[in-house]
Structures are given as C-alpha cells and as structure tokens.
Amino acid sequence: MCMWLIGLAVLAGLVPAPPADAPLFDRQSDVIYGRKAGLALTMDVFLPRENANGAAVVLVVSGGFFSSNTAINPAFCVPLVRRGYTVFCVVHGSQPTFTVDQIVPDIHRAVRFIRHHAERWKIDPQRIGIGGGSAGGHLSLMLGVGGGPGPADAADPVDRASSAVQAVACFFPPTDFLNFGEDGRELLGPFPHAPQFRPAFDHHQLNRAQNVFDRVTDSDELRKLARAISPIYFVSSKSAPTFIIHGDRDTVVPIQQARTFVAKLKEAGVPAELSERPGAAHGWPTILLDVDKLADWFDQHLGRPATPPPEHCH
Image (cartoon, rainbow, N blue to C red; front, side):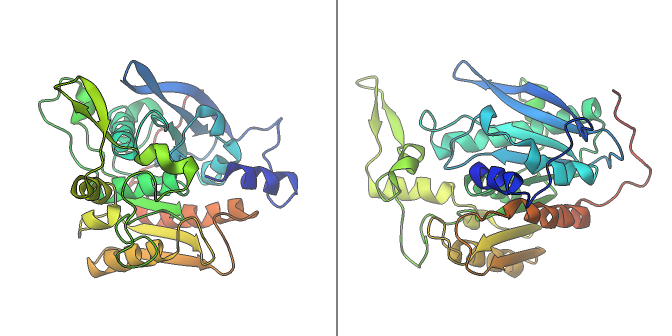
C-alpha cells in the first residue's frame, strides 16, 4: 500500500484520524501465525470495541512485495473497524529475502491460521474477506482464485484448514505477468522489473551437485514461474467475488491488468466490478476515502449471520 499517501491525506485533513482518547479498537500486536526459515510470521489484529459484525477482513501489508510491521497503518483499518469488521494486518516474508512464489504460501497460512482460531477472535470462519494495494492486492487475488482446503494429513492442524476467502476488494493489483500492459509483454525474471522490485522476481534453485543456489535463467522455467504467480490463470467459477479500484494513468501497474482480470471473472460467472479512477496514478492522496467502497463490497458479499455474533471480550 502507498502508506505515504495515506499519511499525507490524514495530515492534510482530507481523512479524519481516530481520536486518540477514544479508540475504536483494541490492537493485538505481533501475533505469530507461522514460522519459516527460522523467522516468525506475524500479524496485528484490530478488534472493534463496539458493534462487531462477526466477519473478518485480512489486509495484506505489502508494497513491491516488501512487508514490515512498521508499514501497518491503523488509519487504513479504521473504515473497516467502524463497520464492525475484525481486521487482520498480515506481514509476510519480505523481499529481498523471499521471492513472490515463496511469499504466496505465507498468505495462505495466515488465512488458515485465522480460520482455525476463529473462536479466539469471535469471528465467523465462513465470512473472511481480503484486500490490499498493489502487491498486497496481487496477493489478495492469489487467495481469491487459489484458496482452498489444506492437506488432511498435515501435522499442524492449522495447515488442514481452508485458505479460501469469501470476498476480495483491493487497489491496483498486477494480475498477469505474461501479458503486462499489453498482449505478449512478458515480465520474466528480475530485469524487466524496476530495480526496487527485482529481488521479488530473482528466482533461484538449488544446484544439488554444487550445493549452491543458481539463478533461474531458462526462459521456459521463468515463464512457468511467472504464470504460477499470475492470478488470472487460476480464475474459475469458484473464485471469490472481487472488486478492484484502479487509476487509468497508472504507470507502475497498467489498468489493463485490472480490466482483463475482471473480464475473466465475469466470463466465469463470478461477481466482479472495476472502479476506474480517471487521471489517477499508482495511488492518490485521498485513497483512504475509497476504503469505504471496499467495505461496501465486503458488506455485500460477506453477508450477515443468522444470529448476532458473540461480543469481543475486553
């Protein structure tokens, strides 16, 4: 997410900041949802103090596939918490250490963890939405088209839970690295990307004979990897209802990415909507105002329980 734009909007008075003496939520920081490579994977949980609706929204904290707990901005959670959503801000294994294909499983793990522990936060495990901006939007879509049950024989019961989500709402996500901005424009490996994004696509594989990691340079292998991390190739009738907001002057992620993805969902019979922002680039100063539109989508597709959910305990 373009956090500097959100901060600018708050400072300019375009977006109201929550009163310091009247918090809307209780925050649980650094909840460990998994471990990889000897590192803890964490999330922060924002629990509404009033009118909890029993549904959850996962916000993927990611910009250029860089993720850090310092990038969690409570202001981005406030519009959702006001609607009663319990918000989970998920930090994933970050580039430059991990590539996109290594990051995607972290988001699956996060949703499985939330669903497995639904009672802990008094949420309905069948009412989980997901969203983010840019890379966070991409990772949200990967769950929207690819979430599902884990292995029934997994040693960790969390890994047996489903990573499926019931709705996606996000900003300007890349969706197809084999047709990026136009048909046939392939982004294979690190160098077609801007320098700040290259580590996320710098794929390596273990050379067992030498016991070192070699960079993947074979075009066919890189094409397979690019396809595997392009959510458009996994759209089906079972994909989650999806809402995307995208600026039509975006030079980082062309709006073609959103247009073709939404068209593909509609072809599959999946509820999908694209809201285009005329003249907007990759983020805009009043972007936080649009979080209410994401919340509208979640209201529509996460539904309401038959009976009121249990209140959070404080």
